[in-house]
Figure 1 (cartoon, rainbow, N blue to C red):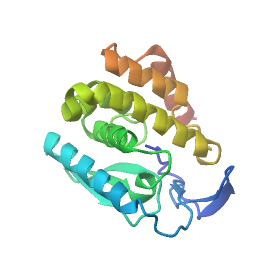
Figure 2: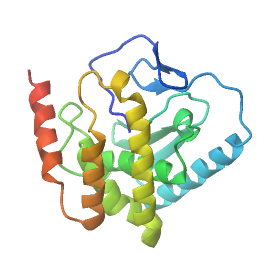
Figure 3: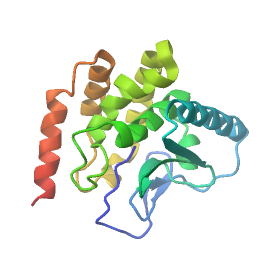
Figure 4: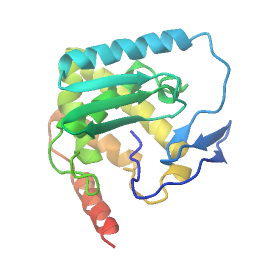
Amino acid sequence: MFHHQPKRISPTFAFRTRAQVVQMSFLDWPLEQHRAPQRNDARRKRVADEVIERFSKAFPGVTYRLLWNSRIINAQAWRLGEARNVYLYGGLVRHRKITVAGLALTLAHETGHHLGGKPRDPVMTWMTWQGQADYWAASIGMPSVFGSHARALTVRGAKQIGAVQREFAAAHDEHGIELPPAIRWAIYHAGLRHQGLPSSAQLEFKRQVAALSR
């Protein structure tokens, strides 16, 4: 979801949003504030487990895991040798703006980092670039898991992910490696229509490659 910057490791710090103090992890991923358990936590965990089970059945070559006790507001695709893994962190599952639609599209995006093909990420070249991962999520990942319900879930999920991204973008994206919400929205809609990666995303990919080569 949030694309981490592997070359830069920073200490945990805090910044203020409108309603809360949010900390950042050592990979510059946002952390939820310390909170007492909520009445709906069990339901949120159950929903996340159910979504993970559906993705595990649809993509058996990827291992999915919910790290419920983590406060990180993110998800992550990673590899160990040839093993493909996706972590979903508890902070994202418990976020007030995220429902089953946001969780589903997040898992589809992270799966897309493994299965989405080219273009590859300019830094971590084993994985699909984040814009292409979004496109794969909308065009292949979500329909593979949710069938005729995929379109509505993708649209709702895209709105939720965009809201969370805007909440943290100012403090999180110092290096300009996150896709702007408007471009992500265009990618999702192009994916739903199987129109190919939009020109705005292709230009953004070239910009990111050029910025990293300086």
